[in-house]
Amino acid sequence: MTTLTKLALGMMGALRPKPAQGDPATSISLPPPVRQGGLPLMEALAARHSSREFAGKPLPLPLLSNLLWAAYGTNRADGGRTAPSALNAQEIDVFVALPAGAYRYDAAVNQLHLVAASDLRSVTGYQDFVDEAPLDLVYVADHARMGLVPVAQRESYASAAAGAIAQNVYLFAASNRLATVIRAWIDRTAIADALGLTHDQQVLLSQTVGYPKKPAS
Ligand SMILES: Cc1cc2nc3c(=O)[nH]c(=O)nc-3n(C[C@H](O)[C@H](O)[C@H](O)COP(=O)(O)O)c2cc1C
Image (tube, rainbow, N blue to C red; front, side, top):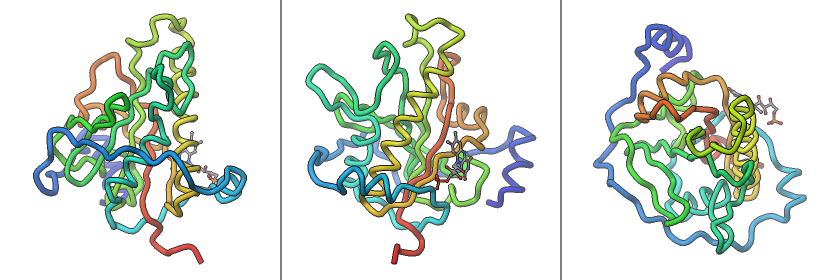
């Protein structure tokens, strides 16, 4: 779908998901993430950049598991995560839009839980590449988990936490020669409707990930 079509549909409140490709599993157990290896940090930082050209090729499940763990996985026995959150509220949920359905990443059990049996990649942003790339992530703040944060600060704290997750994904992408871009140009109402979010949940950002259309030379 072109950006213009999406803008028009968005203005009419009619940007809707497509039917799921295949039968969505109600939950997906991810393989244990591999916590070793990858590019040295300084090389990953040197390679980090935004890309907007993606191949349609799906990401294998082990790679998806590693990516989600890098993004916001549990990295300590006490439930600590790979990205920080104010007062350790862990208010961000990472939603995973795949051709076969949309899922919530459950870091504690390393599983994906189905939230929508539809292909809502095209709803995750106005830019056309989001429809065909194999994965669009959506970062959602759950304000109900931020009871200890002053109300006026909740959105900015949650946005900072989502930014840290996004940078984790950028560094993982750089380390694995994947393409990615964080996106704020999104229809938050359409995404919230498609994911079936509650009033406490706020869509902050989306991020597309996939193999680059043209392999790096
Ligand atoms: C908060 C935020 C929102 C962004 N929104 C979009 C977006 O909607 N679409 C897009 O293509 N890029 C978006 N970007 C990516 C920037 O355009 C990109 O980071 C910038 O051009 C610098 O390029 P680099 O990431 O390769 O260094 C966003 C970046 C940030 C930090």
